[in-house]
Amino acid sequence: MEIIVLGSGTSHGVPMIACDCAVCRSSDPRDRRTRASVHVVMNGLRIQIDATPEFRVQVLREAIPSIDLFILTHGHADHILGMDDLRRYCDLRNDGTLPVYCQAEGEERVRAIYPYALKSRGEVPDGYARFDLRLLSARLELPEGVIESTLLPHGRVETLGLVFTEAGSGRRFAYYTDCKTVPPAARDLARGVDLLLLDGLRPTPHPTHQSIPEALAAAADINPRQTYLTHLTHAVAQRDAAIHLPVGVGFAYDGLRISL
Image (cartoon, rainbow, N blue to C red; front, side, top):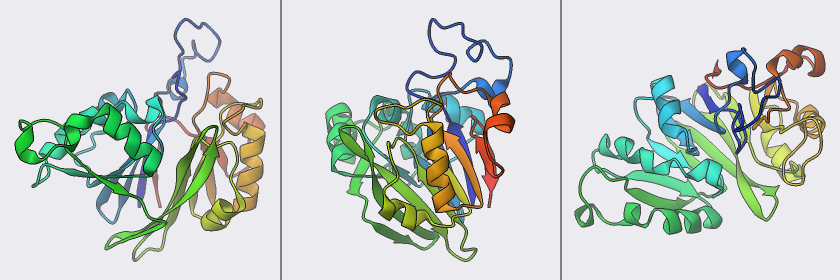
């Protein structure tokens, strides 16, 4: 299994508009963060999680050749507004349609923003995005492996937390972004994964995201082999990881690739 971090930043991105703080002026390329999304390759199956406003830039940078299915964790702007650029990946499929998995909240948002992408093949010209909307069940079994989902609290909405188990290797990856807490059921689902990519917004508390101390406490309980914190603000500098993070935990960055 391979995990490619396309983006590791918040809804503001880093550097942030009209900010000259030390992180926004940092010369470390890992401190330049586009909005959070991840690409997973599981036994050759290519799974895209979320499409940020920078989605086109991200997939060009990482040379993503195809997408077999798409998962929308929730309908907030920084996770959904790049979905029109999925049109090229629709073109590359034999039927011109990309399976899009989400929950009811995400489906409502997709229908509101991309009604043209939900029309049949004959209703719109070639070259447009075309989505086959599907509600993600708690357990999706595929020949390449299993995708399990759980709900995570995030202000007025809940986001999809995702756990991938690769067939054959048994390698496990959990992606828990945009959450205020990790409930007990979600912790149990991810217990002992090989890799955990976890929301850890900033050092100080936030009403809808985990702070770094909250994320570290959740990670310690889940007990993965490796943890990276993502959805980072400009209050976080990569140089601080060695000082403030325990062994086995790092800050994610755009372009990070992990092979399990």
